[in-house]
Image 1 (cartoon, rainbow, N blue to C red):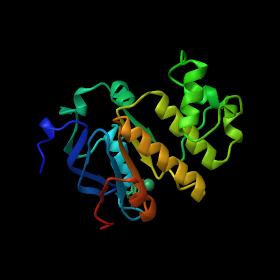
Image 2 (cartoon, rainbow, N blue to C red; image 1 turned 90 degrees about the horizontal axis):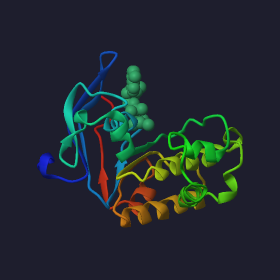
Image 3 (cartoon, protein in one colour; image 1 turned 90 degrees about the vertical axis):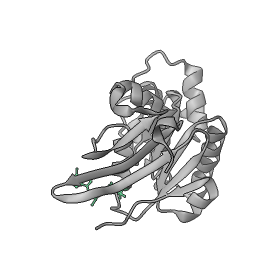
Image 4 (cartoon, rainbow, N blue to C red; image 1 turned 180 degrees about the horizontal axis):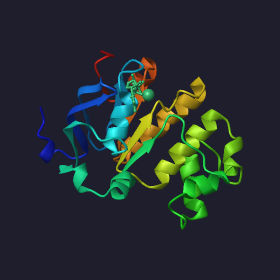
Length: 212
Ligand SMILES: Nc1ncnc2c1ncn2[C@@H]1O[C@H](COP(=O)(O)OP(=O)(O)O)[C@@H](O)[C@H]1O
Ligand SMILES: [Mg+2]
């Protein structure tokens, strides 16, 4: 196994987590180097979403270690960690207001051009900026969640089933976006059970053991 202390990017190993007396993660781990796309492929219920939430400390594992550029994430402030490691949830929550308000959330000074750039990178046009976020389709909201994460300029981007609510053409565009981001040096992990997408977009496949 690689030495997590000497590895750049986000590295987790030996993660264990039990909920309600049942194991959710058993010796789970993942290595996300800068500039590479990793597909986390595992069946429903295997713990993909839980692993991604552990990586940004929305969930604390019972055991195991997670390091960002060699430093335990427990030594970082949660807000600083989440600025460097962006998580796009499968169904990102939309806040009241416009799409631009949603992209700007937590970054009130973000310029209009930066909002537009994030929207375009996420596969939306700038014309979405003024629309009420609550009125968008699930697939459009998923892309607003991606735009929100991209506007933070994360070093590592985690996407939980990013194409689940998208048609094939839109999924393909997200795949192209992720390759462009990786070429810029961002380390990317997408969880999916779509093997064709994983093979088309990812450099590496990671997995988790199935449900116990
Ligand atoms: N807070 C929780 N309480 C109880 N069970 C949970 C909790 N979070 C996740 N689980 C269970 O852990 C397992 C893995 O869930 P999840 O990480 O959502 O898997 P996946 O994303 O791979 O479908 C599921 O059986 C789920 O019901
Ligand atoms: Mg999930």
